[in-house]
Length: 150
Ligand code: RB5
Image (tube, rainbow, N blue to C red; front, side, top):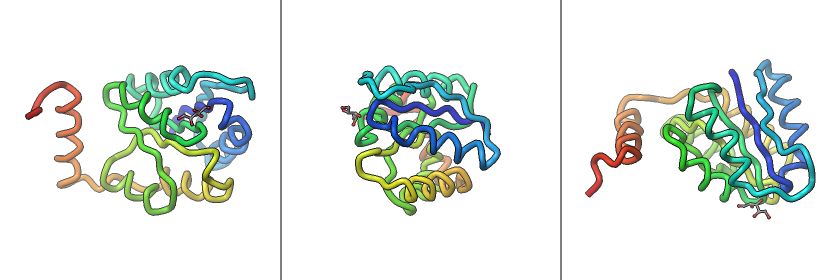
């Protein structure tokens, strides 16, 4: 898969290990930065990854900030992006099976390196189940387009 990776200063410490892991698993990594411990604004980093996912230029995106929350809020402003913060094996798995998550947001402050590695592998290897979940994801797409709102 082609995977875009973006981190802010809080994610800086783990960014290289994550990129190494992804390359080791045979994925192509598009590193959108920020490769520095200097503070940056997470919406700028999220936009770099989410715009690639939104335009279909990569298959998936991974974003890391302090909590995973700001990245998620910003990434979800891009059409077709389904971003969420996951925090354990189950959320990593179910975000794929039921929500077809295409941008994984991780917390550098709360998650250990081994947990992140495991979650990323699970997230990359778990397929979307489709069926009734495809109908629900389609409804999210319609909400994004201003359709089907109460
Ligand atoms: C940066 O200080 C911090 O706000 C950011 O990494 C992230 O946690 C935002 O949601």
